[in-house]
Image (tube, rainbow, N blue to C red; front, side, top):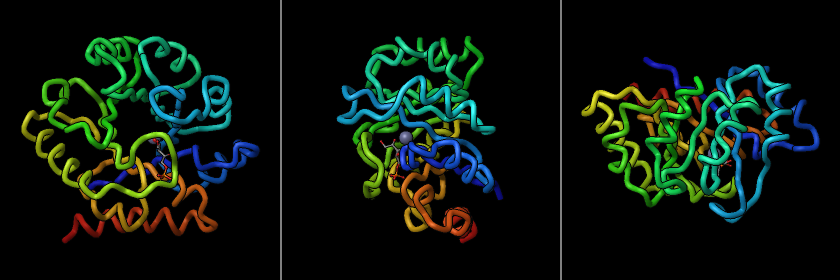
Length: 222
Ligand code: DX5
Ligand code: ZN
């Protein structure tokens, strides 16, 4: 039985008390912190950028899983690494040369992930899959927290797991958007669960965290 990784999304945190929010999450058994960077061009929303990421790095002791929802991510990779990113995930739809970008991220000693919008089929990754560390499958249209999981994405996750086995790749499958203890059970093949509103805004975060792990584990056992 493998253990699912949990990556709370700080987009759902109280930005006026970011250090306390990070400390509260890191007192729990979480694995990574998921940091959503939005530019107002690739997605219709603006979140936070480099100075806030630097502050997160200062207060966090966990790997920073940086989800770049920005156009032309190739222009900013070095700066996000300097600001503290450990895993850099850019969108397939946002750059013409994903392979070049993966190579650059690796040359800088970091993990490279590719994110897919809900309508982008997982098969586009067939050839590059063995070269990357993570695939972030978006289960909502990127841009906002607190949206509903799009059900057809569960089939994509299943197809991606089959493709990964077929090409003998080891990239982790991350699912991002609308994850709750209920929807976590729909994607048993996922290795990493991103959870924003359901976990970060919960009054009893420990209870939601264990419900997320349990929902996911139960599906594997049936
Ligand atoms: C959406 C972001 C997500 C978001 C998840 O564009 O990429 O990471 O913060 O938030 P919830 O879990 O609330 O859907
Ligand atoms: Zn995200």
